[in-house]
Length: 306
Length: 306
Image (cartoon, rainbow over the protein chains, first blue to last red):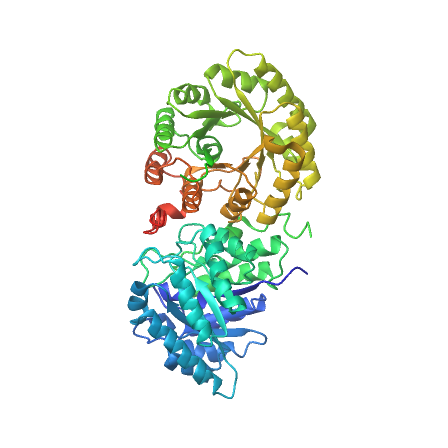
């Protein structure tokens, strides 16, 4: 058994929010169950945002309630504010993920708030969560940490400033998100080092997009910097409604293939994971599906060398 | 200006040999000229193999003669044997690239020879080349250096053995090829280190495929190991007729985007390179074109940070 790497599937949230049609609730739950059965340890199953803003997320309450019944699965919900966190908690979510844009342009268009105001919102969520009888983890994700399609270059010191603010606000975990997929590997290394110097092990995960084709190269750079938590979406579904040009997340199957090939242990059965693409396709037949592992099939050498 | 990295475009050879239709000779030459005008320093323009085996390469003699007239371009031709090298030399090629499979299964099916016999052929080519009035570089490429679709796992010691044999035979440069695209980044690091320990700076380049989606992650691993020469093909065209399951080379545009973003200097104008896709499409309208950079467009942040 190699060193463990945690893959968090975000397709049901980040993938579906861009889909042109809605995936029926029962198909969504079967899809989530299939990925959990393949060994995916964490799934971001939806977001608590107004249904008029993202109609695909209208059933998140039901989805969370269904997903928490799956044994062993960590159920994550994206929440933009305290009200969303309260709804996620009521539905039984194990963790809430709060997006905090580093760039002002993205912050305004995505959250209608300035970054500092959203850091304050995270503090309110943390304080509220600490007063509840059941533990719920609060993760804060620094969106546009590697560039912004609205503001362009995002200075590293701003990322460090927001990340430090989030750690100080009491977030259990801080993640860095390449929301629009502009990052390159040297930048990943540099920003991860700078943020870790400021907040240490509070920095846990990377959320990467494959906009420019560098997704897995960026994941490798993060991995070699010691990151052990990665978001990804099955078949590379995804995007960001407020970031024009952003394409899907890194492909879960290809990421798992890379990690397992390199000797890391994800706990995921790749054949079963690939089979879960069928449920995704059944629920969203018009959506394109990406991923080279699915196309090429697992090579003869996979695990043969182990 | 950052440190220099040489990108060798192999689309006209490795890309076209798998195409279902033939690209007309004059379109091929215009496509090659457009890539050279974009600043691509080296292009593998074709292979000297029997036309009955790879009909797309039947015009390689004309293509080499046309390409050597392009100022500043290094023209490379693949040659399987001495006869091919003599034809390439007669046409004016600046470099010949000789494939030498490390795995016996691929060697037999691709060259109808055992690896040691092909190393001996490289020695004959080197000796013949040294006797000619004009200098022609002899590069030997270790095919299936990271795995084989026929034989499966390829032991590292066999790669080192073949590479050492090629250096000893007098090859000017030795490259490592992930012919079927099975490599993973840790393996790239390990094999590059082992081969360099054996033959030093005679190891120059990496030839990578994106079969499993790890192409650019593998390029990054090689780059960080000090490799400064990479093969790639525009729009990710390519494959290997003797290696079932192998898909295209790494995408030139995406590789250049990664390298330039990281501060390396390729000498390539990415906008002009992207425009050259139109000529490729005109010459092979039915062929699928890959690449995220072309799909997403260059981000606001590209070169803004420099």
